[in-house]
Image 1 (cartoon, rainbow, N blue to C red):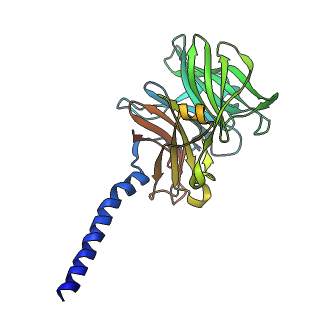
Image 2 (cartoon, rainbow, N blue to C red; image 1 turned 135 degrees about the horizontal axis):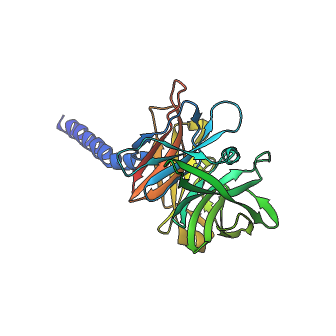
Image 3 (spheres, one colour; image 1 turned 90 degrees about the vertical axis):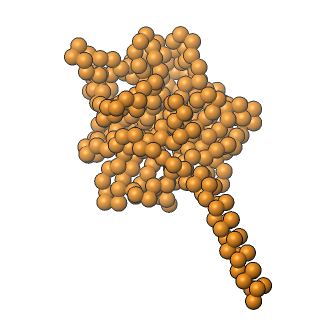
Amino acid sequence: MKGSRLKILIGILMSVILVVGATPISAKAKGVTHRVVSIANKKYTNTQAFSVGSRYAYYIQRYKGEGNAYKLYRSDVKGKKKAPVEIKAIKPSDASAFGHANDMVTFSQKGNTHLLVTTYEKGNSKANQDLTNIEIHKNKAGKLTYKAVGHYKLRLRGKIVGVGGVDKLSSKGTMYTFIVKIAKKIYTVSIDVSKSKKTADLKYVGTLNFGKKYNNYIRQGIEFDNGKLYVPLWAGQSNENKSVILKYDWKGVLEKKTASYEKCYTARRKDVKKFEIEGCNVLRKRLYYATNSITFHGGQFDEIGYFKL
């Protein structure tokens, strides 16, 4: 009898140990996200390219109805007034030229904020993308406006190609070196951002290994910060409310040529049907992201949020 009781007690104790031991691992695997602001829009939704500067988050949204109409917004992720503010195009053609904007990066020139956006060329196929240089400034009325000041084609082995992700690696004056992603492959490209037109050649850096678990996930933009490369992925139709951000060591990409990720930030939202992280950026020990999200009732639930680093 005592032996049976002892076995039962040991079994209970082992179960408790296993549950307690598993909790931190499970919590780490799921990830903890923090919502900053809702960016859901009744007319303009489907959040696409996303980038964070020293204070503001910028993102592009597409019109829900027919046609290729797009709007550029910014939100203050540092201050109290986080509500989205529209940045209007000076020329309507600049707003319609975004196409499906996969990614963008923020940089500064002559005191003005610029966005380099991976865009589809109007009227052409998905394969024919370019990088569009957007300049933001205030007009006389104090309203934010933007205009396209440069279009850059990227060439790989003699052919013009499109890219799925872009971020800044380094700069000197108006000469910038950017990291770009095509599928799993990483390249660098140097561009003089003072030029209105340019065709630049890509230089191969390495290939990202997503592992078997995330190999079939849908690839989004990229983020480079402090020697680390971040790549958001969406699970797709098989698991619509799940997205991950994989973290790579840049030196590992350079040296190994085929690099495995060193950490995974996972977001699985049970309160929405779809939770697709479109892009990410690091700012002040926070890994910010923007989502294209849909509720179970079909309503838009796009948001800006972050993981703590």
